Image 1 (cartoon, one colour):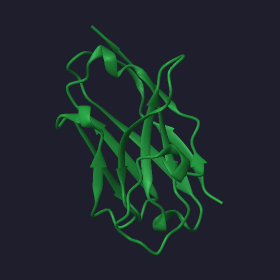
Image 2: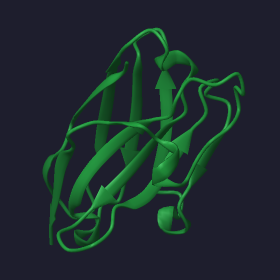
Image 3: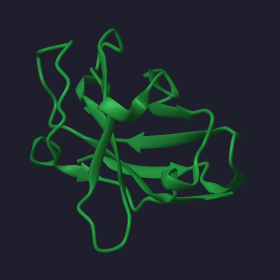
Length: 128
């Protein structure tokens, strides 16, 4: 069992930066791929970024444009999402998710269905 807690969201002006954290408990987290998603009301949860459990492979959604980076510290059971040059359209609830443990150290997933542990989310609001 893995439990995830996101933090680091808040209100920020356009052009600013935030680092979101996803802290996990559970022995298998170090062998789980982790993804970040975001959601606004009345829309589907959108994939943002994912990282393999080795930390060596990362994948980003098309609109990342170099503004977003994902990385992890398995010693701290934490995955981070750095977002720079924030825009008002980045306003959303941000959620992290962990996949079941795997022997494949470099696999990443973009599909929500591949993740079976989810956090409660952290709100990011970007003012113009």
